[in-house]
Length: 145
Image (cartoon, rainbow, N blue to C red; front, side, top):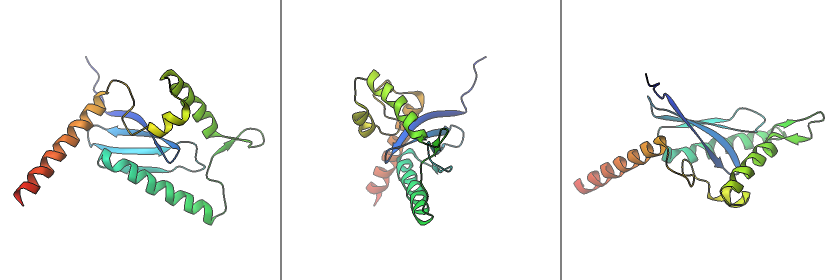
């Protein structure tokens, strides 16, 4: 018996901060959670096309709050809190970039949600289908006007 997929996972980098992204395939709600920040910062969108904007809004609000409270937005660790969690995350991303023949900087700049340079996942194909359907609907609506 084949196990049904309830969620799909991916990653997106928004303003240099990675976020883990999960799609609930039943509700089609996409939820994201930033990695390496001093507090939980999450966001959600009904469409993948809205994901980056919702993430930027959440990140901007968090950074503004940190500035108001004069505290650092990044999570620290180590005996004397001398390291940041993002240092380790970016070390892992560097390995992925090198496997793709890219520098870390190029990998981060080119990274788009659900659009790595690899074979499309079932989730990505599903989102592409949704975007095509949205475009057809938009075009039909504009033609009626």
